Length: 306
Ligand code: UT7
Image (cartoon, rainbow, N blue to C red; front, top):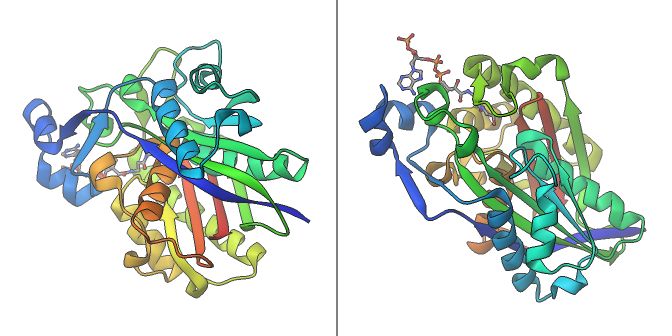
């Protein structure tokens, strides 16, 4: 059996920080409300999706000790491409001078886990190394006068290098899902701003994340007690808390970058993964659960043995 494992990781955030106080100064909101209802204190905005993706990808290659020519394929998960045509991965491929193929994958905030699972499948078919990136610049599709969305969304990128291994590899179980009938709950028309029914997204997010995590654990033949670290989509600390309570995973076994990044869509899970890896929270042999949800509505989870 041919598996795969993550051998490098990297993140990129724009320079510009927007604090809750900055938002308080221009919107009918408050630091207290945003902190209490979302867990976000500040977020980073600026740059382009391909620019942030390139930076994160370059760091992941460096961490893996690999050259761009070692990469067979780039999969860029994004819901905010820089242009309608071509795909943003084409720019990343050029900027990194990767010799292999490049594609964008859009499954909103679930995109990174979708991309990671897709990459595992392609490695099973014979690829050696795939650069999987989650990058979004939601600030470009956020109406900064709309307090429903402006307090939540931001920009960033996270990347991993997935490399073939002899044997079963890291991925023990996964679950990818979609309920397109709920796509009206969170959308942006082409050229328009994001529109969101926050309360309903919240309600469904908790349910689908829990169900998906349970499905992944069943496929991996593990239980919540076995999960050393849950890396959830960074959308709202109350969603993470509710998911943890239902799964029976204590909050201190999760990663929180949300406080300083806001919701960066497809970048959120890899940003949290990179934070956990860099801070030594991922120990060899640990079981790690990635679990996310997003517009579509989409959801995706995976159990990895680090
Ligand atoms: O990647 C997926 C992306 N989307 C999400 O994850 C969104 C999921 N939803 C959420 O995170 C939450 O629903 C929100 C953070 C969007 C909203 O929090 P909530 O606790 O569901 O608030 P709510 O919509 O029920 O509103 C509660 C109150 C309302 O006032 P009243 O009616 O109680 O007087 C709102 O008008 O809070 C008010 N409110 C605000 N106040 C200050 C709503 N937004 C704000 C705001 N600042 N930004």
